[in-house]
Image (cartoon, rainbow, N blue to C red; front, side):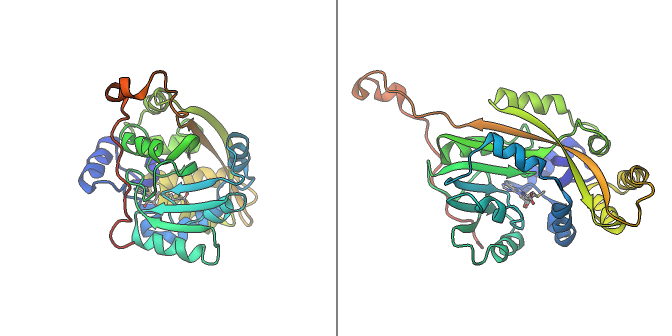
Length: 289
Ligand SMILES: C[S@@+](CC[C@H](N)C(=O)[O-])C[C@H]1O[C@@H](n2cnc3c(N)ncnc32)[C@H](O)[C@@H]1O
């Protein structure tokens, strides 16, 4: 979710940052606090509700799977359990290295440096493209949507997992830091782009108070983080010495790549009118990969 990338910034500021830096969406939480972010990933979805929903929506078995914006590769081993191959794609060099370390020894898992807009993958080579709290945040991600259609096989799935800005209390903290964020407009954007939306409630389980405070502080502005910490403590009154729970909503967006086009008349007669739109050429790994 956008707020995760830019605690305290507003939407227009984010758009300016995005344009200035080119293709990569800054992610201060995982870029500057990788250890805390790894603990956050451990704390998230402690009952596996997102994975259960994904299992109902997408078939991973025997699939060629790509995790776009894979960060330090936290989800790659899980994706690799059923998939035929897994490719993590990540623009940030330090995270590319961390993800490669994580999957060292997994023969069918590779990590490439690249972006959602220029995937280092051939056309029609992927069955499932998974992105979790990465790049596909709403208006502005059209280049990545087109790139997904390029690399997906006909009927392949693009599945986008993100935090649900409508779900309380977490959504309220998100909106406090992004006052101009419009959940309605984002939902409309994805619906118009052909996605179905599936909402799911999860439980984040922090091992202790210190972990909870550290994690909430990398997600929110200082002011909002203090509010979130107080509220989380209030919800866990009486259990401060042990693990602390926080309900957090997610939304999972799903769309399938178009099936192969049906040819309705001889190609010679229609070759000009029906020639496919020019495709983005196969991207090499970005420098430094
Ligand atoms: C909040 S992190 C999520 C990482 C990982 N998906 C996870 O769930 O642990 C967002 C990630 O997206 C990456 N990212 C930023 N811009 C990107 C882009 N244009 N294409 C793909 N990934 C991008 C960041 O470097 C960062 O690793």
